Structures are given as C-alpha cells and as structure tokens.
Amino acid sequence: MNSLIIPLGIAVLSFISGMLGLGVAFAAIPFLGLFMEDLVHQVQPLSLLLNGVTALLSAIGFAKSSLVDWRKAILLAIITTVSAPAGALLAHYIPQTIIWIIYFFAVVFLAYRLFKPIRPKEKGQENFKLAAILAIPISVLSGLLGVGPGFLLMPTLILCGFDPKRAAGINAFAVCPPSFSALIPHLNTAKWDFNLTMILVGVGAISSYLGARATSLYVPSGRIKQIFALLIVIVTAYKVATMILK
Image (cartoon, rainbow, N blue to C red; front, side):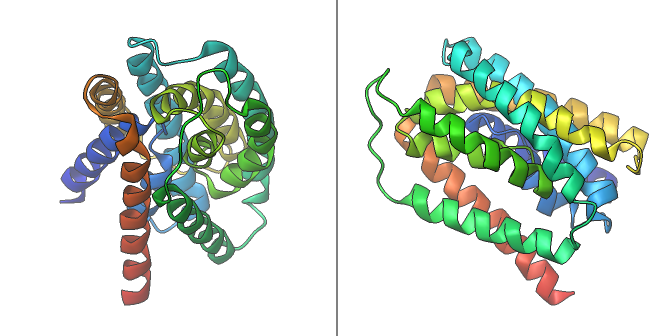
C-alpha cells in the first residue's frame, strides 16, 4: 500500500510546491516522516534530493513565462549554496526533537505573516539587498531542517516586496543548487531505497513542472502566498496530529 501512497503523495505535494517555486522538501519532510522513522538518515537525504530536482523543473516552468530574474536568482543561489551545508552538518549533532520544534515554529511564523495583507512593490523597487542578507541565516536553518531554503526564502522575497509570481520564479532557481550542496554531508550516512527514490524523483519532476506552468498561466499573484500559507499549516498540523497519536 505504501508503494502507491508515497508516490501519489509526492506527486500532489510536488505539483503544489511547483506552483509556488519552492521545491517539495518542506512538505515532503513531514509526509515522508509518516513512513520513515529515521529523520536524518532517511527522510532528510531523500527530501533534499527531491527538493533539488523539483525546484529545477519548477524553475524551467516559470522561465517559459519569463518569470525568472536570472541575475537575482543566480546571486541568491550562490549565497544559499555556500551557506546550506553548515546547517546540514549541524543536523547530525542536534536531537531530532529539537529539529522538529524549530521546523514547527518556523512554519507557524511564516503562515501568520503570509496571511496578512502584503502589497508588492513596483518592479525594481523591491528590497533585494535585505533578501540577500537574510538568505544566509535562512540557508543555515533550512540545511539544519533538511528542507532546502525555498520554504523560507520564497516568503522572505514576498515580504521584501516582490510580486509572488516573480518571487516564485526567482526562488525556484535559487534553491536548486543549495538543495544538492546540503545533501553532500548526508551522502556517507544516508539510507537509500534505490527503486523508491527513482520513482519519486520522476514523479516529483513531472508534477513540479506542471505546477509551475499552472501558476504561470492561470493562478493570480494574490492567491499564491495564501496557497503557500494554507499548505504549510495543513501539512504541519497533520504531522503534529500523527506525533501526538503515536
């Protein structure tokens, strides 16, 4: 049964995360945690791999509609790629309970901020310098959580004045390289199910690309941040409920 539920769940989550230019890890972490007991050696490595692949395909989907500001995306990618491995290394020394607590507080804060009205600034008037500075601690924290920086960086771009569609396009490319760099410290200790991994990578890639195209063509910018906030609330609440019921 799990052989069907896991790919189906990743397909749905990848489509939604692809719509938001996030990479799937922020949602895959609690979802895969329902089926895999080892957070650091099973869930995090697989989630980071999926995050890099789905973010890349999402970026391609947004680029087809000219929604990727390549100069800003490349600069953020450099910053996050250099910073993310530090958090991944820390994950081996911090208790899993503490990591989950940090994750829950982070998503609750972001959901609260994103549900509040935010007026995007005119193109060229966004506070990109602030976003670039914040990308450093964001990357370290996301590396610690094993989710890649997208789920924190994308709302940060919105809070810094970027239109949600442009924020999603920039974020999709920016989080791809650091997802793979944060995976490196896990390679020697990761426990892989090769067949399952290949299936999830394929399903995630296709679904995230379709999600990005759906946003580019059909979803109003004003709805994107609410979709993001609602998604992380649902996924996190579900994980909390399952942890309590165990």
